[in-house]
Amino acid sequence: MAFVPLPMAQIEQLIEHGHLPRLVGEDYYSSVDEKIKRLPVNNLMRNKLSSGSLAIVHPAARK
Image (cartoon, rainbow, N blue to C red; front, top):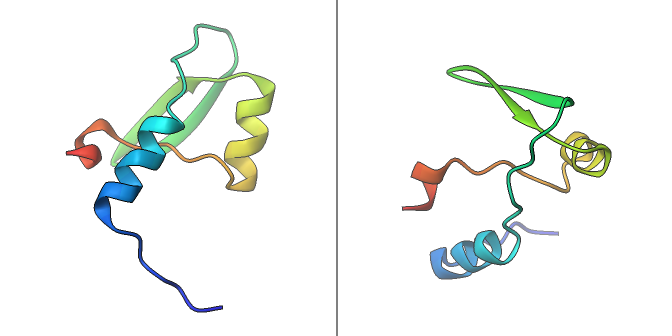
């Protein structure tokens, strides 16, 4: 299967449609992107992040 790039408008629509609220909790997912960041997650979010079916998008990348 060949990789077909998506138009930027379609990518922005996917991000907006799949936006999740920020959680407050005791369980954190650690990410390294120039510096270590910790994001509160629940079990479902952790599993999806680990499997690659959920992605973290930096707000500056959306502009």
